[in-house]
Structures are given as C-alpha cells and as structure tokens.
Image 1 (cartoon, helix red, strand yellow):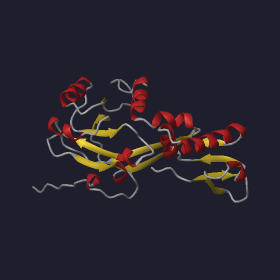
Image 2: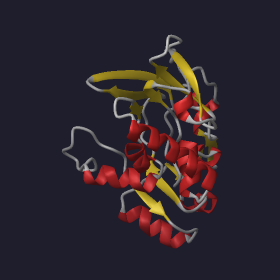
Image 3: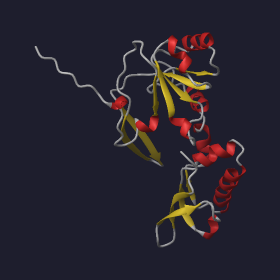
Image 4: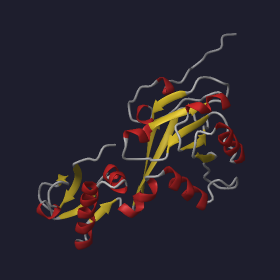
Length: 232
C-alpha cells in the first residue's frame, strides 16, 4: 500500500462523498462529517522519519481535534498497533487467544530476529510452531514488502526466510478466509479466497504476495482447490 493522496470523505456539503486531497489544507475542503481513510502508508512513512508524511498525518489530527463532531475511521491510535506484526501478536497474547480453552484461537507464532538457523529451529520448537509455517514481514501495512510472504516446509528451507519476520503455523482452512468488519454495533462478514490446504511433507519454499491470494476475484495456483473423484 503506497501513501495515497486522495481519501473518501462524507461531507455536509451537497455533493456527498468527495475525495480529500491530503496535499491541500483540509479546512478548505470541508466541513466534513466523517473521514474514511487508509493512511497506513503515510503512518509507516512517518514512523520511519519521513517529515512530509508526518506533517500530513498531523494535519488530519489537528483537523479532528478542532472539529470534534467529525468522525475519523479508523482513529490513528487504533491503527498504530496493527502496523507491526509483533505488536499485533502481542495483543493476541494479552487477549489469551493462544489458550486451548479460548472460543477464538490463533495458530502458534514466534518472531525470528536473525537468519541463525539453529537458533530459529530452537525458537520454532519452543513456541510450538509447526511445518508448514507462513513467514511474514514485521511491517504489516504501508509497504509493498508487507505482503511478500513465504511458506516454509522444513528445517532445510529456513535459509529462505527474510529476518526479522514472524513465523506462524499454517492451518488448513479449505481455501476460504472470512474478514469481519465492525462499525459501531454493526458487523459485516466478507468471504475471501485464501490458500488451499497444504500437506506437511517437505517441498520447495513457496513465495507469494498475499494480495494475490486474498483479494476478490484473484487468481493464483495457491487458491486452486483440487476436486478429486474416486471411481469404484
């Protein structure tokens, strides 16, 4: 996701939805009832020291602070924890979603900080991460690299990881992914394609872009489910 110049906005003006030009003063384009954005690219750039990106984010914050009746979806402080996969998974730990009696669970995971194979094998075993596992970049949003992932099938393929990264056990789920969106008291569930079931046998590492396997109408060999028939 590259920083986007224009964002969709709900406005009190007659034209309804308009595009917010983040390079222009926001007050000149309002007033607004709601700003629906995807500033993750700008947020990641600002965290990395990009002064221009930081100024743009601060301009939005300043507008919201001065216009308390304008809603920002989602608020920056709510998104910050999701920009980094280490922080994401720390939240899962704090929510006790790794416990066996939890109604909602998440596959085992661990951060692999270096390319030291023996240390990574130890970390994987200590944290119950099993093969195959998905290797994910630490940065979760805002960069093209955030979506570049790998599926590792055995110890011999640990040379293919790009540290630092998060390793998470892959759980077969019949190539179907459900995304849940919550706005206020309303919930929306969207079905998306996902990676097909995999066997734990040793095979070459699979490199993929998550945008190619989890977007509507996407096409990838990883999402192609084999339907086999047995003739007696």
